[in-house]
Amino acid sequence: MKYITLRNGYQIPLLGYGTLQISFNQSEQCVDEALQEGYRLIDTAAAYFNEEGIGRAIRKSSVPREEIFLTSKVWIQDAGYENTYKAFENSLKKLNVDYIDLYLIHQPYGDYYGSWKAMEELYLQKKIKAIGVCNFSAERFVDLCMNSRIPPMINQIECHPFFQQKELRCTLHAYHCQPQAWGPLAEGQRQIFTNEILTKIGQKYHKSAAQIALGWLIQQNIIAIPKTIHRERMKENMDIWDFTLSKEDLEQIAQLNLGYSEIINHQSPMTAKWLNKYKIHE
Ligand code: NAP
Image: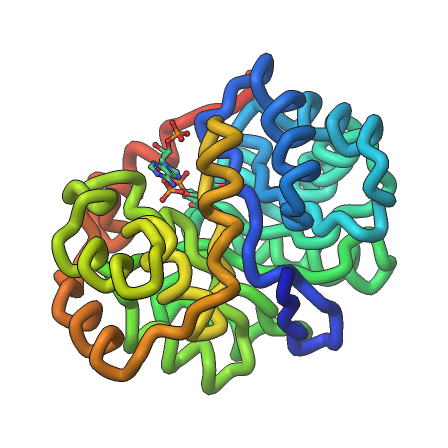
């Protein structure tokens, strides 16, 4: 496992394990297996409804807690100063841990300034080791940086060969904010696993298209958090440290960029509406 250092000096693995759509029942076993396969970053969220199972896997694992980098996120319904405190305590309880390594604002909607103030305080109280946001566009991100004591250390954004997010990554770089890629395998869309360019490049290094997509991220120091419920794929997604893409490979992968997301458009009013309406508790 390779690590990268965040702006505050805290170390984070460059490859992690995503848990979106891993059910409450499956999550304990999946995270247990992921830890056995060497994953040390586990990405969850209150909105994934699997924090309890993940907490159980972490507790029963032989890997010491301090070697596991645990991420959770506050949902829009819990945006705002007081609600975020409550949501954070709730996540701690469900995960059954006494700190969270990375706490993120899940969506760029609602009273996220209030949330951020609470997260800054929790960070200063050392209940969170690093704080950040998800899905923040460049201007929202800069605005938050300009109006906060502690700027976000991470922006977790959709990023993969079909949506490369170059401009946003430039802005993040200028603010020493670490990009973390969700959907690093494009959630399987556009037949990424049989994509001609990725498969052909993979043949040179004896790697699959998925491994090339993940290698493309980590080679650029973008943290990748692929999700899989299959142990063989956990292994496959981890086996990406022994090749370096050439300049020509990178040029070919650059051609795959569509420049927009086929998964979700956070700039769309419809997205703002349905995500605000999505409730995770009473
Ligand atoms: P992803 O990791 O790009 O893709 C997951 C899909 O790829 C699953 O269908 C999985 O199927 C399949 N897969 C994984 N490895 C494979 C392999 N080697 N070969 C073939 N198929 C493979 O998508 P994601 O889950 O959306 O993103 C990853 C993580 O990012 C999430 O789990 C979550 O933790 C986080 N996330 C965050 C946000 C946010 O708003 N902050 C949004 C989305 C996701 P199987 O499980 O059947 O193997």
